[in-house]
Image 1 (cartoon, rainbow, N blue to C red):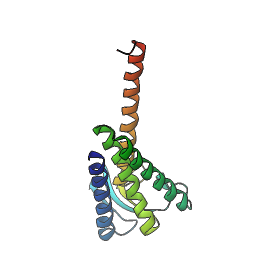
Image 2 (tube, rainbow, N blue to C red):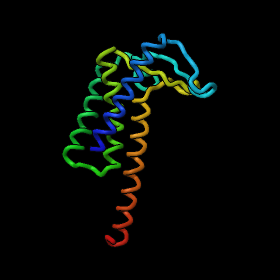
Image 3 (cartoon, one colour):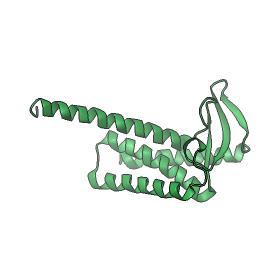
Image 4 (spheres, one colour):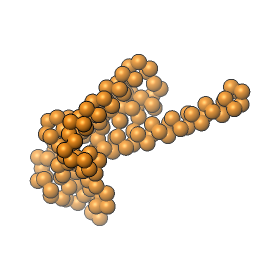
Length: 154
């Protein structure tokens, strides 16, 4: 259940924020949210991360669909522990949010601007956080597993 909750939460927050900002902020314009730190800057991103690889739309669509499908299949088959399910839900929800943009609009709506990093969105935050948490989870658990093996299974 935590997988579907985290996926749905990310998807709803992502799509609502993109819809709201697109209807209240002209493309290319910027407004301070936390002045001097965080700005709302509406950008239509036709590339991948950081606007790279323009024109690879079909590849991005295919890869996102494979990632989402793979995560859902894994979730349904193995029913991972709560934390792992949440991390996977963050990844799938973020990928799905950006996939919806690409299918519906032909680009991804980005709006969070730190001024020193490329503009991004809530789906991107979920993907990065979910990915980092997943890697840390696997690293820590593999470390524990290797320690048990070294200690004769204890």
